[in-house]
Length: 448
Image (cartoon, rainbow, N blue to C red; front, side, top):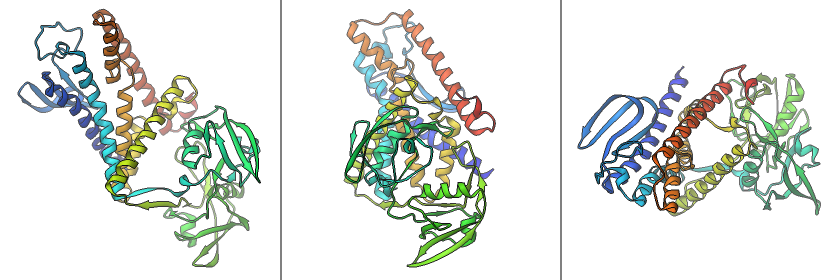
């Protein structure tokens, strides 16, 4: 129960802060340009508490699913008086600046937070920097069917030459049931194939069935009370064999445990230059994000690179990461529109709450700040989508009016906003349904 309250508190703080920043962007630019702001609200619906200062009512409202800034005369259906304080009395470039200010604040927040995080603690999986050399291929997967073997190097993947694993992983994940052209090298020879990652897990992300080559499979995490910890395995142990079979990648161990069907195994590790063998019995447990259970012993292997970057380097890395993240979000949206990727990939308030709760319980504050930056970037990009009612829709209509050199008629705008409102309501229902289906047993089979 304490975990639930931590998740609720974490998501309330994270979303509340991001909404505050977003709406402050609209508010500050509107006030700067002389537009009268009537309401600055965190949340929607009934006013719970707040105060009035000048022309503005600053309030917290009952429904904590967003926020808004209400400006005088911003509704096209309202009667225009010509008052210079009204939103529609201002030139289009003023309205453009006000509309783009909110998403811009979210993007700037993401950049600033990541910069600060990287100055304190810059950590990422070491294997992401490595060339895409295959360390393991799961049987009966797209990679195995394409003839890919351990030791092969991916030389070309869907337009990317000599990719690192940092480039391969998102390309694979965003291509479920979609063909990818691949060239791999083996013993100086090149082979061209087409591989189709299968949709996998509750989020239906692409899965090819390969795993990166690792210099060594070293224990970096132990779950309390699980067989590995009870048997005496320690963080830093290098895993050599399971039942006498070598382990070139952590997926090889996962596959070996699957074959045991819960029978006791012998795990040989290298510790301080000495080999040690431990006997343990795997247990069948649920895996977050997957539909089936799996035999496990409760250890993880993901060597990380950890450092603290100076201000300039942290800022450049933050810009790079946010640029890559923005392009991935846009690619995800494009593929969802093209029906090339499942709507299950979208995380709603329950998924965000779960992630926020996990980040809040991790050691230190940097995981929660990094997650806040990622959510803020998503919020900024989402609000820039050309959907009426959203900031991007306002910008699109301003652009069309600029080309037409006249305002769109009020009747057309009214129909546009009504259709957009229905779309957003249906979208919200779909996202919440997805969240519930991922969380509640038995509902998953109903998802498309």
